[in-house]
Length: 79
Image 1 (spheres, rainbow, N blue to C red):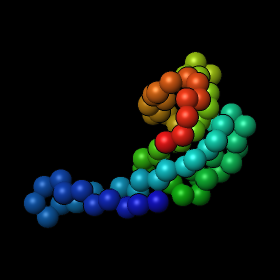
Image 2 (image 1 turned 120 degrees about the horizontal axis):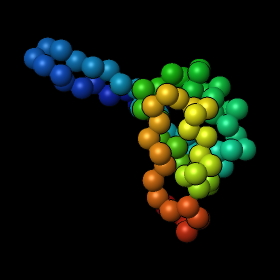
Image 3 (image 1 turned 90 degrees about the vertical axis):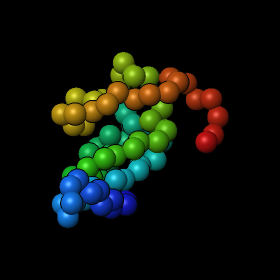
């Protein structure tokens, strides 16, 4: 997890916690992800290797504001 300090106005800052999680199949590990989110309370989360098509992505169970996953719906290789 990384903390980022953003300058909003002169001498006014915003601190954001940015985290990345290699979930390796979100539907099978959703309870672990939900607990991790509760424990770490990041402002921004980047999920890697969700391995699920967008229509079955569990966005309602995650957060009120979830940006739908982007990218291809199938495994095409390694990053």
